[in-house]
Image 1 (cartoon, protein in one colour):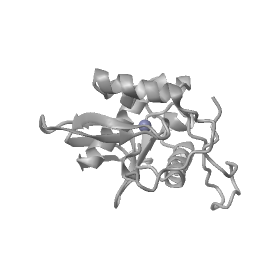
Image 2: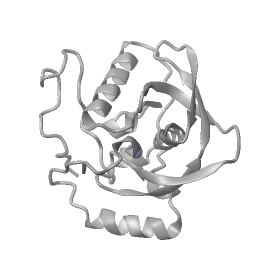
Image 3: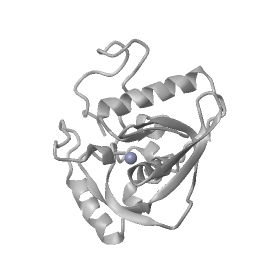
Length: 197
Ligand SMILES: [Zn+2]
């Protein structure tokens, strides 16, 4: 499946600061999105460059979260940008302080233009590491909690369609099969872009 979501060529140079790269975002159908990612073991320069690429690609796509498999890298790393909460996490593990759940609309950068309700836990604590190997944790509620769950799922090869109830998933799959992602897609200005992970 080709990816023509971007109008400008990727790679160094293309109007972005040197050393940073906007990567192509893999779309549903690409087998890497169904493959569990490997834990990071080397906290080295390559990891820092992956974190930079993830952050830059996420900003370019104006999404709220992006996991390494979505740019073709099978490592357990994601970046997030939910309102003023921005960052990344290496080797995340989720904890749930309570049982509260909430249904909310969700999109995914690997499913352009597809938005459906997904039930997620309302509060999430994501524990993981910085790119230097220092332990950190992100306490997320509402949209950030949703983002942390969506991105960690990506690292397990789990996609948001798997989290929909049966009727919603049927409807989503019908729309996905009919979608033509080879044409240039623009995010509708009416869309809540802070829910696209
Ligand atoms: Zn996603």
